[in-house]
Length: 221
Image 1: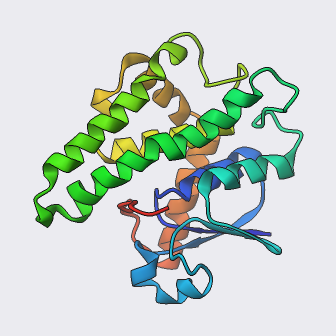
Image 2: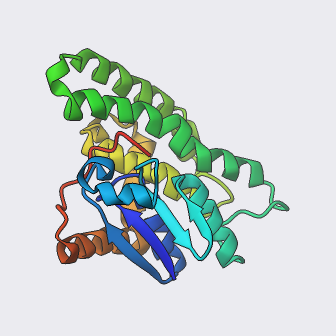
Image 3: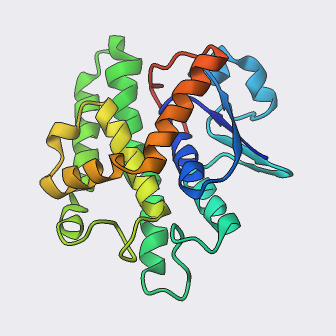
């Protein structure tokens, strides 16, 4: 069975959401944030100290978007994956990694200086990186004004990847600054049963394992 190490609403939410969308059985192990500080034994499993960590037999992965791609490949055929023969295959891969590399990166710096290290007096840095994130996010507005999902005419793992960045933006209080089509897209994603099950799964596992359900200030992968 797949084992996923997870902090509440951190980047590991991407593979958790993916698992729920695919209907794959898994074990969810909750960690306090940051685990490299508050759960030092975790470093024996993942020397980076970051989350997610997914273990499936001899496979160990720590990159959230790559785990989503891996899970789709294992579950193929699935509508959540865009195949190489489809016209939108390149767009699918691009948006899958856009969610992490382009959108989540500036958010982590905004979180660091707004929530995690506010005593450093760098609120202007947090605001600058929030604006950077929002500027990158606005590039999706023309696309989402014309279609419900990012590519291939359907919901895919690329939407999970970008959708997590929108969840993180919600925790940062940035939803009111979304453009109209992006805001409507985020509202659609939140209606998905897979998304709702993932939220319920992390809350139930956190309560059962004695971990705070307060969202993690996700400054690391």
